[in-house]
Length: 302
Image 1 (cartoon, rainbow, N blue to C red):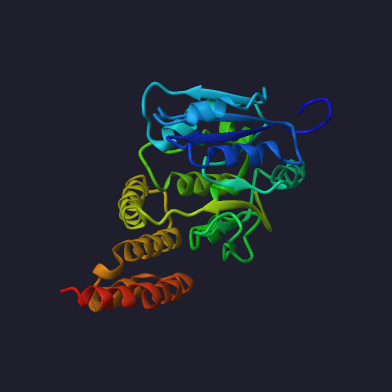
Image 2: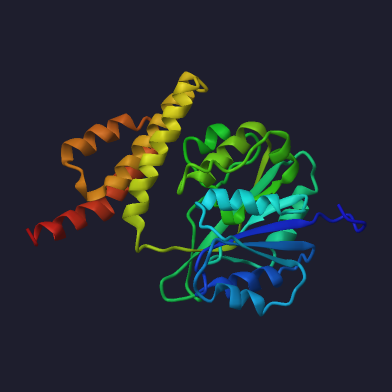
C-alpha cells in the first residue's frame, strides 16, 4: 500500500478491435471516485482505430501495450497481469463499464485482510443503448468459502471481480490458456477453493451483452467444459459430491448450447442428469420460453 494507506488497483483491460466502445470503458475508469489505480491496456493486435482512441488519453496511469501477435484471450490476460504493479487486480473488458463507486466500494471491502477476492451484482446494457439497463438476476450472491455454492450455480461476473494479487502469486493461480470461453469460470473456481470471498449485492458495473455469436459461444463453452471436466477426472481431484455437481453443470451447459436441436426424449434424458434442482428448473424454464417457440417457427420453414 502507499503512504496514504490505500491499495493501488491494477485494472486489466484486454482489447482486440475495440474502437466502438473502448473510449466509454476507459472513461468509466477515469471517473472512478477512487483514484489510486493503473489501467493496463493490452492491445491484442488490433487493426482498427483502437490505438488512436487510446492515444487521446494523456493520463499517466494508463499504460498501453500492443502485442505484435494475436493471442487467445486468457494468454493475453495473463500477459497483462504480469505488467501490473497494484496490490489488487480488477478486470474491465473494452465494451463494458463500471459505475463510479466500483473501486471505492471494493477497496473498502478489501481493507479486511481476511478477504482474498470480492465481486458484485451488475447491470446488463439494453439493446437500445446506455439508458436502458436490466439488473442481472443474481440474488443473494454468496460470501465466505463459496466453492460449493458456485460449483452448483456460477454467478460471478469478471467485470465485478477484485482479487488480492498476493493469493494469485501464493497459490500459483492464473488463467488457463487452453480456453476461450470458460477461463473466467475456471479461475474463480480455483480462487474459491483457496480463498475467502465477499459478495456485494449492489450493482457496481454494466455488462454489454452481444447476441450475434451466442449459439457458437454456447457450443464452444460445452466443449471446453468437457475438456476441463475430463482433466479433473484424470487428475482425480474430485470427491463424489463435487463430481455430481460438475456433471450437473456440464449437462446444463450442454442442454443450453444445443437448444432447439434437442429432441423431446433428449430433453427428458438431460433433465434427469441435472441433479441440481435449481439448474433443472432453470433449464426447463429456458426450454419453454426460448426453445419451444424457436422450434415451432423453424418447423414453418421445413
